[in-house]
Every structure is written in structure tokens, then in C-alpha cells.
Amino acid sequence: MKSTTESLSPTRVKLTIEVPFEEFEPNLKDAYKTIGSQITVPGFRKGKVPAAVVDQRVGRGVVLDEAINAALPGWYSQALQETNTQPLSQPEIDLTRFADGEPIEVTAELDVRPEISLPDVSAISVEVADAAVADDDVEEQLDALRERFATFTEVDRAAQDGDFVTIDLSAATKDGEAIEEAQAPGLPYTIGQATMLDGLDEALTGLSKGETATFATTLVGGDRKGEEVDVTVVLQDVKEQQLPDADDEFAQMASEFDTIDELRADLTDKVTRGKRMQQAAEARDLVLDEIVSQVDAPLPEAIVTEEIASRRQQIEQQLAFSGATFQQYLDDQEQTEDEFEAELEKSVRDSLVAQFVLDQVVATEELGIEDDELSQHIMRRAQQSGEDPSSFIQHIMEHNHVPEMVSEVLRGKALASLVESAQVKDASGGSIDLSKLRADGTIDDGSDADATEA
Image (cartoon, rainbow, N blue to C red; front, side):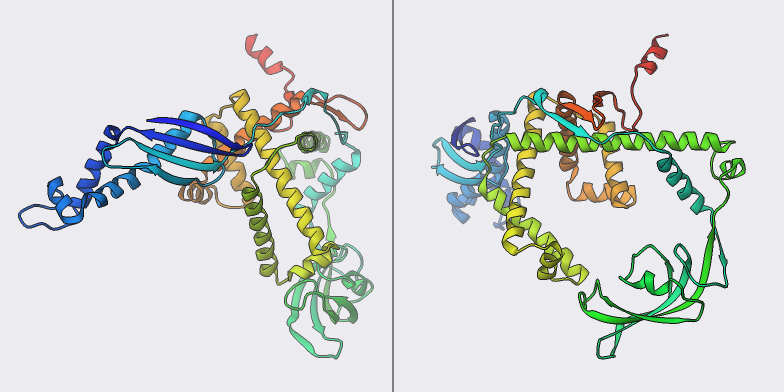
């Protein structure tokens, strides 16, 4: 078999496959066996019908069609490997020459990744936020830990910011008609969180147990989203949160540390590592955005159109699930439909260019992937999705998502390589060497290697 490629455009190629008829003979034998097992001929067992008899019964042309249809997928895959062609779309296959006993010729037209001229990444400079940890950052983490061990005491006073309350909510139209789906008795709520309705915090503040208040608001979900209503709230009880003291006793109860100073030091370290990871994520985004802005990459328009349609469909499905309309979404975003379409198209085009850039780096640098890297990535994806890891793995295996996971890991490596080549500085002007940043946010200062050598 011989395979050649012809460039039709920067993003489309024509693949020509030539196969001598003698290489097609094994496929013919398989076709005779397949068809022979499907027909009944007196005097012959199924699957043992001679080729000549099969020809008499169904015709040589049927056998040739069966054989060529079975052979084409394998020839196409082999041709892709021989010509190192990376397909982006399903091929348009044409059997250009096929006669009994003669050499066979097949052509396939398909979209491919364009060759991209990358800018000088070492000349790219980006600025990220400082990773400095303030006392307030640590206290915020400590308070969050204390809240996990908080107790709640019912108090006989007016409700105030930060109180935990139980309320009954009832919404009615401006005409006074109760909205059946907007009746909610016994709701727990924390004043000041502003997670339910505009105006609720203000209505509750100053109320005492058993008192009622009514306020006007706009519904934020359901079939009546955006409707102006009157809401009546009844305060059932008021509880005050009691946080444990931040002392050595609390440190021993809430952690493996003996003193509050040790606990604070550990929280400081965790916050610092988290800020370093935020720096790295910000740097990756900024560097990739800068590269994409400097790359003039031709894109397969069919792929662009398909991706735009897919993303719009996802948005519309999510809106339908939440009970909102597309027009409501546009109003919330303060966009016209033309502005939405333009933004969506730009996002799709930038995303495709970014993928092509990273895939080219993977190929150029011959980046590979280890089994443990793939396993760790799959576990992180499972955690991000909130699914049970076993169920997540079963799902990706059943739906053949493993190649997608492999691509994600390789593209991540490619992006890390690009970022390490760029100049990354923090807001204070200090240079950041992300090549030494470990996955947990710690810095590789070479001490581990020194200790091993010692």
C-alpha cells in the first residue's frame, strides 16, 4: 500500500491511497467467508460455501463491495500513520479506481491542524499578582476552621448581621395573589449572606422572633424569573454563632498541632502555596493569551461553525434547565444577540488556536506521558466533577474519553513549557521561576536532591 498527501489549503489535505489488488486478496477471502455464513446452499455447511458458488448465488460484485467496505477503515488508519496526518474532521472518502483484478485507488479529503509559526516566547513578559500573605488571609482561614466547630445559641433579641435564623417565606404577585411555587416554610438562613432574595437581609435585620416583614423584590429563578413580587417573611427563631477561642486548646482539638502558633504557621504555609498556584494559573492564562494574540493561524471553517453551534446549544440547554430564556440571559449580560454571537465566535477561534499551538509544541518537543501522570489527572478531574472516582473512570472508559484525557495532560505539559520560557513577574517587580513550582505549591529548591546525594 502506498499513501501520499496533497495540500488543498492550509487546513485541508487530500490523502491518496494506492493498493495493489493482491494486497486486497485477504479481504476478499474474508468477504467470501462472511457472505458464505449468511446464505444457505443445499449440500454445504454455512461458512463452507465455495467462492464460486457464492459468486453464482449473490454475484462477484456483492463480494467485492463487502470486501472493500471492510478494508477501507484499516487502509485509512494506516495511511494517516504513514503520512503523519492528524485529522480534525471525518474524511470525505471517494473510491476513485476500483475494478476486479486491477490496482485500487482511494482518496480522502479531511481537515487537519495548520502549521503555526510561534512567536519568540522568551520575549513575552506578563505580570501576575503578588503571592504575599497578609495577616488577614491567615485569620480568614483560621475563622473558617473555627466555624466548623461553632455552636449556636438561641437568643432573645432582634436579629442582626451574622445571625442564623429560621424563616418562612411567602411571595405574592403585585395583585396580592399568592405564588404557589414561591412558598417556603422553615428555611435556614444566615443574615448577611445575600444568597436568596434582594432585600431579605434588610427585612430581617431588626426583627424579633415571631415578627413579620414584607418587602418588594424580583424573583431570580423558575418560570417567574424577573417578575416583581411582594415577599412576606416571618422570623421563627434567632441563633447566635459562638466560635471557639483561637487558643492552644482549639489547635489541639481541630488539628495535629499542640499550639495555636503552630496552627497559624501551618495555615500561613497553606495560604502561601495556594497563592503560588494562583500565580501559576494566572501566568498560564496570560502567556497563552499573548501567544494566541500574536499567532495568525488559519482555521477550518467547518470546525469553527460546528464548535460555535455546540457551545450555543450547551448554553441554551443550561438556560432551559434553570428555567431562563435566551433573551433573559442576554438581558442579564447586557448584550445584544449580535454581540453575543461575536463574542462566542472569538472565544471559539481563540480556543482552537490555543489548542493548535499546544498540540504543535507537543509534537515539536516530542512530549510524552507516564501512566501515573494520566492516573493523577483522571483523579483530579473526578474530584473537580464531584463524582466517585470509580464511577468517573468507568464513564470515561465506556465513552472512550481516555484519548481526551491524554491530550489534556500533554497540552498541560506544553503550556508549562511555554510559560517557563516566558518572563513572569509579580506586581512588585520580582521574577518568578515557575519551573521550580511543584504541584502542591511548594518550591523545589534542590534540597531533596542534595539530601539524596548525601
